[in-house]
Amino acid sequence: MIEAALIGVAAGVVAGMFGVGGGTLFVPALAIFLGLSHIEAEATSLLAIVPVALVGAWRQHRYGNLRVADGATVGVLAVGGAVLGVVAANALPERVLEIAFAGLLVAVAIQMTQRALRPPREQ
Image (cartoon, rainbow, N blue to C red; front, side, top):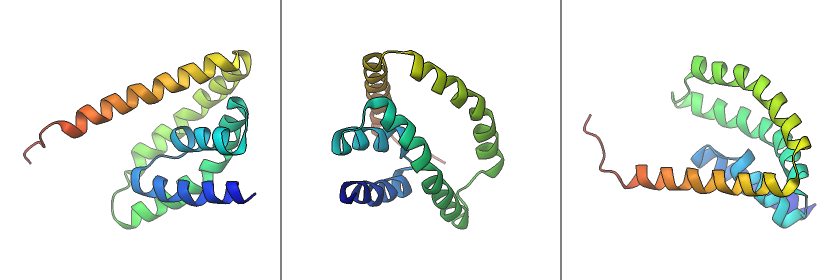
């Protein structure tokens, strides 16, 4: 239980700073530190991200950074995708999920690194 508490605190800080949590932080942490299978970590992270996302969005709204209509549109339309994703995750071998997830994280890391290294646009 101590490990889960530490993951929760760390995830909250990282989610608040960078807007990440469920997939990029919770899944690896739950698998590595709590020994959950990949599918268990995915399912657990889906529940864990709800309060983190709500509090993070509320706090960002207070700073004027939240685009409510865009967030609501993405969130509502993602519900159907989540249903399909859960069905697919439970139908595929766990090894396939782990490799696909690792590939996704690598692709995102490459894109974000390239974006961060570009010269800033003049405004």
